[in-house]
Image (cartoon, rainbow, N blue to C red):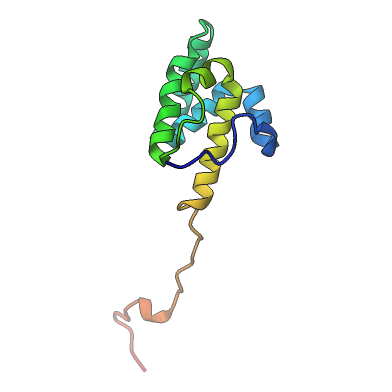
Length: 130
């Protein structure tokens, strides 16, 4: 099992993610959910908002957090239920930092390579060869 790349309360190690998670936790949760298992970003965000009105967003959040841990074999440093219920924004930010870390280290964006455009690529059909 691997440890988390950052701690639950390491929010200021990535200020941009921290600020985004604080201002719009449901949006960051939706983006995380999309990266974790391909869930709809908008749908996940809407479900979060609906459940947050009842104080139950931790129910869906626990499942996504566990899916993230399973995907990358991350050990549970504190109980997912406790983290998602009492430290919601910190947990969502930690997951976003983990996804950013994993995408940068494991098969991150591939470099763009241009294919050479040589004359040998196209056949000379109907043209006289010299």
